[in-house]
Length: 279
Image 1 (cartoon, rainbow, N blue to C red):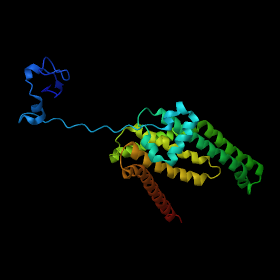
Image 2 (cartoon, one colour):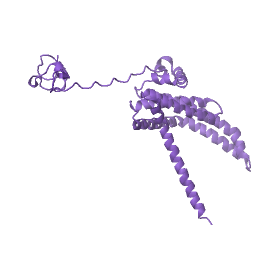
Image 3 (cartoon, rainbow, N blue to C red):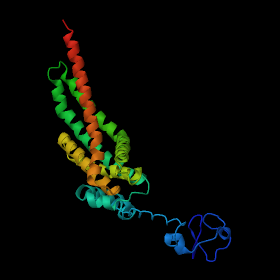
Image 4 (spheres, rainbow, N blue to C red):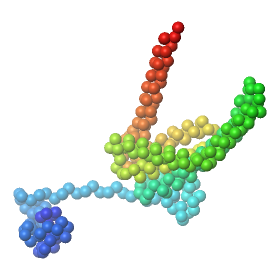
């Protein structure tokens, strides 16, 4: 066995004709023995190229990937249960390739169900309680009651029709922000699809919105749990530490808070300046 002097590709011994890898002339170049080409023959010979790092292992799969066999509803329930109760194991098993269509479908279905349920409970609240509040101090309480009814159920119908679009936009936006943060922090060991899958399956927290009439409490818990899932999912999908994953998740929030605080100070300063010029 000999090596091509042009590209170090293994060729037949004795060499004849052109190198099948690079097309270089084997006979005119004069091939050194394999041991000399690898650095064992003294000066004048280049060392062998450094070995490539081993590829990251491909995960096994999740219940959502088996929905054709176990059924759509069973896969939806089992996937949601796995994400909420054993997120580390789920994201270790989650494939990071295969397209964004499958995880987007899960996110849209589970997210739309959560939004529809929350808007339904809100519509009932506006129809019963909100209308009474709106009628206080009004000359025409029946008009206020009607407005409260329309406000609640119009929002419910809008969520039914357009809620899935809002969920899809939210997932793409969240995945884009997270992936940019990973790129800036040097933690994007895989491409955007891996980050998108984490953002999509983290929508499992929307199932908490199915709890009736606990909107503020459940909504806050759902948002915090989503951030936790982002950290756990990014760490597993990109094979990085939890600290770097947490930084990628929390940095955009910290930047938004800083910008909001700065705008608040500027607004307060403007009002103080205007008040100082009043007679």
